[in-house]
Length: 347
Image (cartoon, rainbow, N blue to C red):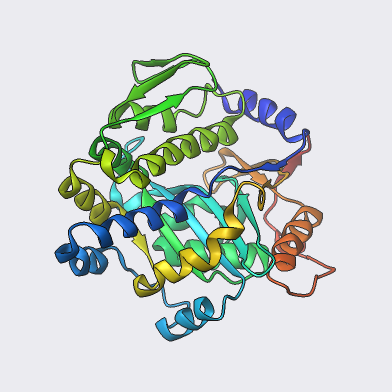
């Protein structure tokens, strides 16, 4: 299926209402569940696992991070699903194919989960170029993604959580498989899923279920939905301690596939303070209304991107700022900086 047809389907999809209630904020709750398990079982392995998954990016000191949580300040958490090993990629040139910005206001007990399109055309801060946002990880890992998202939305990222999507195989197998109900019928890498059919799947099938993109009529949005289904079901298993029999395998999966700068000593305080804002009634899910962008690269080849107008960026930035209890902004001149635009195809 070619990219033009995919964009056509996405354009129709984006004309629909883009905001609806979410059910669970997957990567952050996933982290909470893992830490709770680690704290309850295998206490002797806590320090080793913590050392392996904690990776600061230099945007806040540990003291500043502790103060934010202690004082129950509104926060932004960038959730990254890194796809390494897929499509011929190595660990060095992985992409952040799933990017979600979670904004939480614990006092108001409200939160928003913003899905950021992977192909968003924006400045890659630190690389001095404009490119697809998901390429930022290949240029400079989580630090460059964070800096680029901060510039795009004119906001600060307080914490990040990164999961290697390839690690889904190990996570799912460690909990004995998960039950999923497919929202559509499709075949990917010789594995077929039937719309409406609920089945128990292993790690390999879970990765196939979460990864398929081009045959989904909703494109990236559809793929992100299936990724959330997998993680939600995984969280349910993780929270049911009696269902997990191989904790050694689980801890190994965590240590290899999770990175975060959340102060581990504050995780339970973070959970207790911020979780009430993450219930289904208090969590809204938002999407950016983006348009098709076609540019010529240095070799003269036409490449598809997506882009958000200044009006969309302004609206998105202010929705984040409102939850952070910051004043709204009135102008957003990003497009004026995009001097290398070749031409736009407006749906």
